[in-house]
Image 1: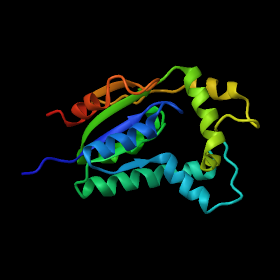
Image 2 (image 1 turned 120 degrees about the horizontal axis):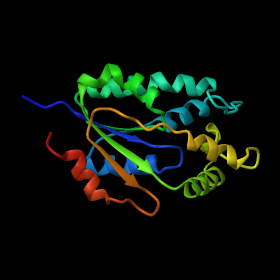
Image 3 (image 1 turned 90 degrees about the horizontal axis):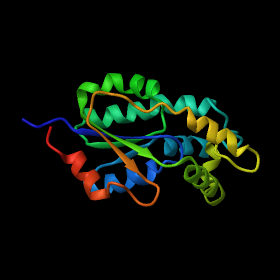
Length: 185
């Protein structure tokens, strides 16, 4: 008898280091990383006139695609890392149909607000695909980012969880995060 795959959920507010950790973790354990932002960026690639806004059409379209991809992989028995800045109610709604398909591990990324703001400003300047997202920049008040980030509601599910500070590297370190993911149930 084989055990179900593991779904590693990387959660946290914007610019908390989720996507970077998701890819590093997926590489370390040997599985795919499914990142909500990357799905939306792929949609924006096909929509040259797109202008992001909170709750825009592509953000709404991304939600079911993200969870459909997770369901497809989990039903095929694939351990998967899932990365998104969803608030608790959105995560719970999307995960509900998947709960019986996988063992869950939750990694909550955290970073001080000033570090997150600096990251968000840098990544928008250095990465043109960030035009898909409502990041702070010359056309947006950085304090809107800080205020929105302060309202973030963490994912809360009955599952093993680990908090990771991504301010400067990872605390706990990547090896400890991998051990957490692989720990026997």
